[in-house]
Image 1 (cartoon, rainbow, N blue to C red):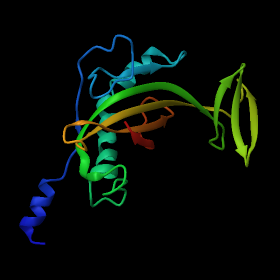
Image 2 (cartoon, rainbow, N blue to C red; image 1 turned 45 degrees about the vertical axis):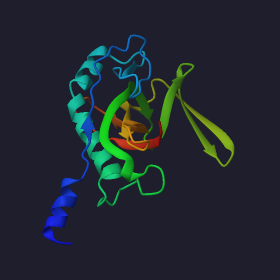
Image 3 (cartoon, rainbow, N blue to C red; image 1 turned 90 degrees about the vertical axis):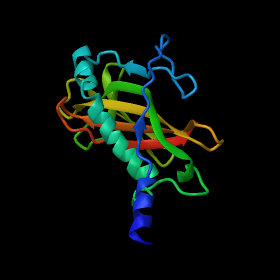
Image 4 (cartoon, helix red, strand yellow; image 1 turned 90 degrees about the horizontal axis):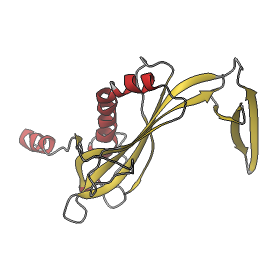
Length: 196
């Protein structure tokens, strides 16, 4: 492959491009490419408004990291992390590079010293795990010094594609990060992707 071919191929690389919908989401519904509404926002009861405002002020930083993940996992044919391939879902040929935010959730996750997740239930911390088919529950008191609290940020984005010949919803991508303090760096992980 000559230098011109390499440059041409590089030029054709699709980069993530955020679409921002301005239409109000009066009922706080889940959006899609057809509805073109602002994202659904969920803030758990007990999650401080000041914390949400600080995180909202870091929204650009979150999206920059999400764009890196989209590029590395779904658009960059040379990436070792590429999760899309020709002939199966998601098919790299159909992505436009456009994406939009569907849903954001702000809550807390509680983890013990072994990093196992807990939720508050009936006035206690509760962890549910499985050993084979056997369900196991572990409880700790709310004043336990074994529990650490993390800010949990979940973001779902919609990626568009041209599978039918016109731009439309193609894939949803769920991402999550946990941070111990509001100043910590985000490290989003892909939870799942699926057909939209």
